[in-house]
Image 1 (cartoon, rainbow, N blue to C red):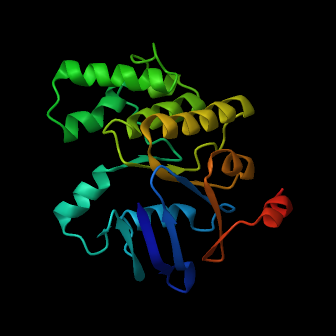
Image 2 (cartoon, helix red, strand yellow):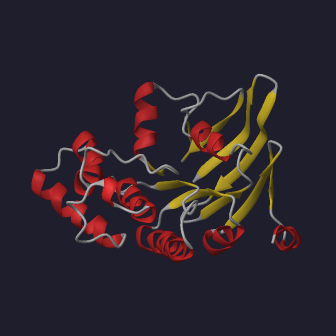
Length: 228
């Protein structure tokens, strides 16, 4: 379980997060909905301790990342797979090597075990047979799928998705949405999806929150209809 408690973050006079609190229960996906520029990505980075907060804390299974030692912070972050909006793939590495990188850096798996794990992950995200391609030869949607595979490499307890369907065509958007739902069921991950797209939010979220002017609140049925 992730417990976000009274998280506040400002950049000079601009208040981005204002006393934000919510809980991500086990095997649940929480969606944080809001237009671009409302602080959704700042929220994810603050939750992981990448950005220091002005007030509040985030507890991962009872451990506060804001008050953790460097070693404990490292251990907590290993439990989180992050899917970047930009995908953050390395252009100089093949698809297989991009997915293998976390395993090479953080495990003592043999080369064969890593290769087998990568093949399984690529099959899970619908990219089987693409292991030897390079990012520049992939569509935006295919890059997003590889980024999801890499996020799953260490079998994380939590998955954070930063705008997973932004910039994708309707067919690929539908594929990514279905993949997020399938992976949650298969791996029983908890996680957070931040998005500006209400249809994506409705499709994947167990709970949906709206982030607006730094404050967060649950989206009501009426608000969902108005947002449409």
